[in-house]
Length: 248
Length: 310
Image (cartoon, rainbow over all chains, first blue to last red; front, side, top):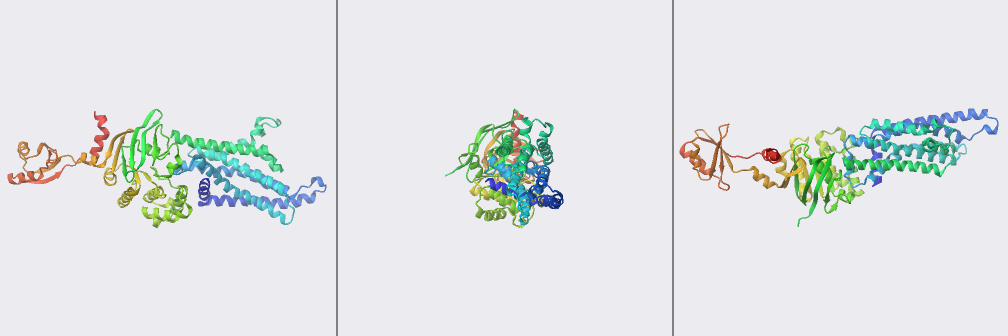
């Protein structure tokens, strides 16, 4: 049942030009960065004489592409997540889902998986693009995998947060703005409190947990953080929808 | 044997201390069509939302074919088809796509989806519109899509909140025929403002006012209340009232402002023929004789405002 809801969501993204346009524009951006990365790599490395100055091609290009991707997702996920529930609220389509034989958890998970599936297409395309480097260089697949996993978890967390804020309001635009502000806050919260490695802000910051992945380090603590983040916001969303049913 | 499809027990819904619906209880058997009548804000839609599990009742319970809506919402919801006040339509899809999604979410198995969609479209007269975007359909067609999604999975109970709003007269006739047809194998609950509609399609009527059931019974009772024992006669040269009272069966005569006379008679002794004969033989100049029907509207007003009058 969850997958049926997810399928509906995915279909609705592609029913309008919106889905295609976002895919095309983002892929264009990532592609440009990728090409620039390849060009720069030769320039920079031909200047680097000492071995210590040299970095691998995967890392060099990966850094710029994944850096851009995590930044761009900060803007595009709120735009995609905003309509998930608030649009249904505004056009009175929620009763359609509520009166179907679905539990609230199934509805919320379905919507979440639908959005993550769409974003996974983007992540997968980035991964494939970087894999093409393997044709003339040895790609560091471990590093690539860690980055892809990190980006994917980051994007999924963004989606969970976006879904929650979308359930709070009937105005998609309001949902998008709140989501963006919340995400931005969570990303930069550790910037304000630099120096103190043990501060709580560090634990809360999304970026703080994303950076190890970007360096190629897969830490179970970071994975747990992302999973907890997702579960928390999905639970909050279910509770919000349940309140609709109880309070009307 | 009659099987109960809907049982509502003491449904109560409180909004901020005010009872929007209070103590509504009723049952519905298979094959019956129940009409829900009431002025605006009486609690019709709230009751329907509770019946379909869209709103949790503050008190009371709902059972669909014996399955409790609160304890087993998924099983109970699978037995219901619901059209809310505003039809829930995803405007970015075509009619076919939307109905396929509706079928899938209501648990129609993969290989039956196509036939279910086809059948629902035929029943609601949507076959021509299959490939059109719902966004571009007229209000009437959108309403039909709303009805189609409610009956797509062949539910035991169909709940329609004002199904004929925004339709043209021909469409209304079609939809009424459809509701009657549905009433054969399913149970139907519909709410409406249009009183003749209730008389045409419903077996049972409930009138709800200020959250309370003020009338609950078969449509015949309502009809009886409507056809009072009264005749309306027009006479060019009316005699004195005493003359009329001599006609057997006549109990009272009342002159109306428009020049007609309202004759009240004893139940079962319609004096129409005797009146006509008397009028002809005595030269009263009869030009009109009609049964005097209180309009359904009047009955409705009587029932909903009797509290205020008392």
